[in-house]
Picture 1 (cartoon, rainbow, N blue to C red):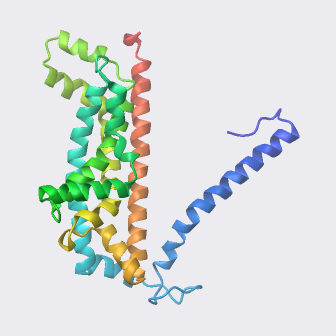
Picture 2: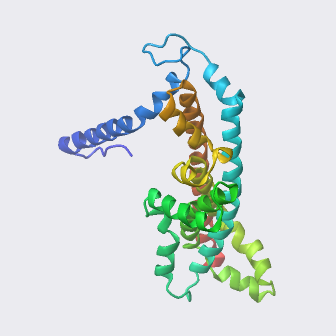
Picture 3: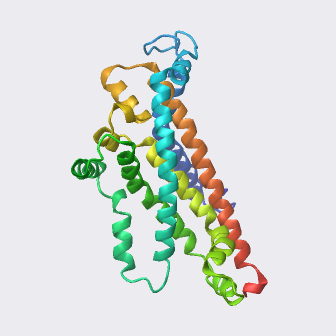
Amino acid sequence: MAVSAYASPLEKGWYYLHRLLCGAILLFLIAPILVIVPLSLNSVPFFTYPLAGLSLRWYEEFFLTIRWQGALHNSIFVAIVVTVLSTVLGTLAALGLSRPSFPWRTAVMSVLISPTVVPIVITAVGVYFFYADVGLLNTFAALILAHTTLATPFVIITVTATLAGFDRSLTRAAAGLGAPPITAFFKVTLPLILPGMISGALFAFLTSFDEVVVALFVASPEQRTLPRVMFSGIREEISPTIIAASTVLMLFSIAVLTSVELLRRRSERLRGMRNTDPVSH
């Protein structure tokens, strides 16, 4: 939005100063992230400035060595299973919470999203002792269940936000035309809340894929994930391969967040089209 032609000199000065401050803050926040990109292309196994030369050797080590690829495959496997479980559970929970007659809605919602509020270390310690008692430690099941607990709240939040503008007269109309509840859900409700479900699923995938604290507590070396290998590498040695892995994860996160934003805009367009439909009025 451009500055108004009728703005006073003081208002124009504040307009440009405000944007300058926002740009400086944004640069301050993203500079530590952007600096890893050229460092990942360094040709020598130590950090120098200016760079000694450009090389893709660290990306080759990340994509071709067994240690890194095994961890990447474990992370992808766990994240995919967690995404499916958390999307199903979170969508069902959001559908139930969105009903006007649901009792104690605020209290139940607070309990369901509490994993996003409780410090992750406390959650990891609690999960460790509980899984130790039931014999689930050092298994993929333990990692998947723990990550599902952390990821489901994001699905609940996004789907609940989508359902906030949902017109329930559509489902009543489908029921009035003889459609069973299952048919009404898949033909009417699901297409409208699908952008929110996909956004929640993407957040759930990132939550599981990037999580390291719980993995340190409940996973064994056989279930080591990519963030755990990166964490161990930082403690034991500073390898440029970690920088290359961080760059790949950063680009992947940017792609996911861009997809979420596109889905949000599509959801707003669908909601706007529904609100401007003359039949609904």
